[in-house]
Length: 399
Image (cartoon, rainbow, N blue to C red):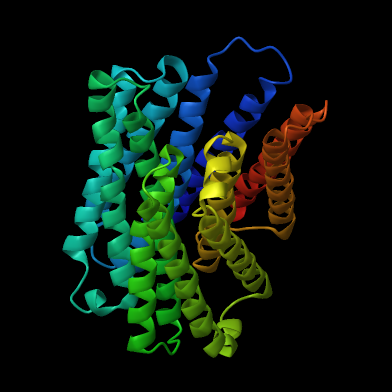
């Protein structure tokens, strides 16, 4: 099984995501006669389901299933998934939400359920005792839970309409359990698999505390997604408790890593160590943003400011998730990553995040936006594109 090819395909999707992102930024710089919403739908679906899903499932297959003689089953599942992803890309671009794009989206969901079945059925009893298995299993169930959003979205559109608050909540439900459930929990599971590979010392008590705090936090922080409706005070309280749970859980995880710091350093290159520390800083910032969002005054500001929401989602996707994937793919020899291309990527990340949050603050305070703002955002996005082209080109030598 050529898993490196699968990762090249995943990075190829990331290139398409960046290209579509640049194209969207051009709309506010020059006149373009194309349906913006169609590009947005294609951009978001390929980002989550092309790049991240393909990279995560390839890593999980390598770590848990690659020695199980499942090549034929997995190959069929993989290519069926790619057909659904490419189908979504083309149909969302040229038809938007229509019957054919919904068919490809449904095919993707069925393929993702097939991957979960493969994982649960073919992992051994010994693997099921591992901490990494327990976390990966939880992440996959979060993936299933997130899929409730797309399933009910069609029902809501046909009954209540796209202007209904339930329509928005269904989208937020999907995004929350994709980003904070499936993506981030899976990344933590892969991190624990790395710990187990090098026999890091983690007590049962430490793991149980971390696991229950972090997983409970995923459920509780969902209430952040409905604060735009200004619900009962309990929703704010639950959101805050979830944020605190996850901060404490990260503290427990940090303690585990600190206790094994020498062993970690001996099994990581300097570059991989730098990537891991970068993710750690971005993850802490994400948890702090999350906790702040539980305060009513801040939740009200965020609910009417789309730039803060987009900036936060990009912080998770382009920062925490994507850089984590770079680190693990590099460490497990599935991807090559040059320091130059990553440096360009990091510069683009901070430039675009800075510009997004800058606009959010300007809108919040009622100030005037800089005349060249959209041009600067477009140029910063092209740096992303250049960085990912460099990564894709660099894979040529990853034999």
